[in-house]
Length: 514
Ligand code: DQQ
Image (cartoon, rainbow, N blue to C red; front, side, top):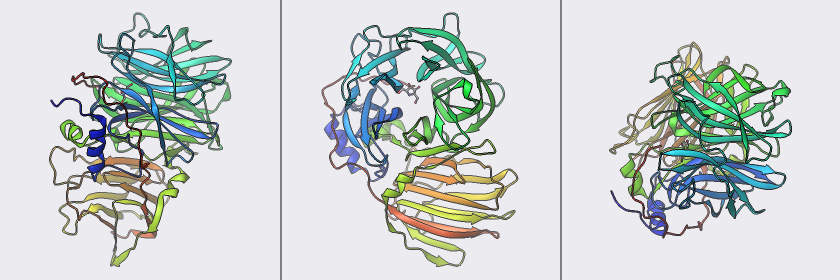
């Protein structure tokens, strides 16, 4: 395996890759995975992220940091956390959250050490700018799962204030039972009391291959409440509001898919009424983390994993992008829905020019925002070819059709690329919808596809090889009709000058899974 490449060279490689999304947030170069510490403070949005500036592979994880005033244009800040020799995070500063302790910013994260391998709960304190971070001297503040519990893994944090105390969830799984989230309480963020599991899943209810299987471990737990008026806030058992628990289903080193559990928060327990797939594209919108911004809306980030193999990612010099930020809400029927935040429209540029040929409307674009309504009587379908060559040799095909449960959404990647070493599997799922007419939005960014059908999201990654794989073709079939079709070119959002980390850290050349 090749050794680490200096970050400036990684940046050159990343910039040379025409498939790197550029309307989305990506790291300057190297590896990026989970969003962390997502927040808005004094009007400024913060996005921290799992980052290896040394190579496009998952090891030696740092916390990258960027800030924004509009959620789509970002400015790099210095790396917030780096692995420290001899500390509980000697081999990685893994996922976590940002909280405000009486005005002082605090990061609660998983220190990762290869030694066991183990993950423990650690703290770091920030200055006002959130640029400089100091570790809590008594790290780790939680050194492992509750005594006597037989767990599959133990990491990732959700922390909030309730009834004058801090509460924390840590993602885990009970061996032989299912994923779970352990609940803790604290007065000072440093000393934590165990309150047992908030919720435990049952891994035996669905087959492992099922796209809604809850897995044997819950990564990146994210717990909050949603009110009938669409606003959101930290959990509060006394509120009587619906609560949602987001998590990413994991099994033996495999990152599977994000799920959301809806239910009732009763003191120290969360009674789950229903699970829902959070994104029909599975691992391509993994490790979601959300926050209530100053307007009260729930803003969601997630990691768009690559579908290239590990060696191709290393060669590309970069890996991973964030989804475009989304607003998330719970509708009256108890369905969790999402849409790109309104600020994404700031990236819209010139309108796409559509040409009609019978039931087909054609335009071109590989960075585009397309929207239409689809009237879908029984049996009808709308087929949308994306990143398509005229001869159809390369194309990614979205099909939206009426089903018994609502609307069937399929993204067929089998012809999405003539390249090798790619995941070309299809995505499929239901968009619950009682209406004949559904709203469709499609965001394309070079190698990313984000689809929203009545607020049900499907995220994926595709890597066309041909320079002419630029066609968008919207076709009505079997009595479907497409209305209000509009599209815009999406602008690049990446800053011109990125903050390149030092390239002299870490020579460690090992490879590790999650
Ligand atoms: N990624 C982090 C973990 C988390 C996983 C490490 C999910 O904390 O469980 O980079 O992608």
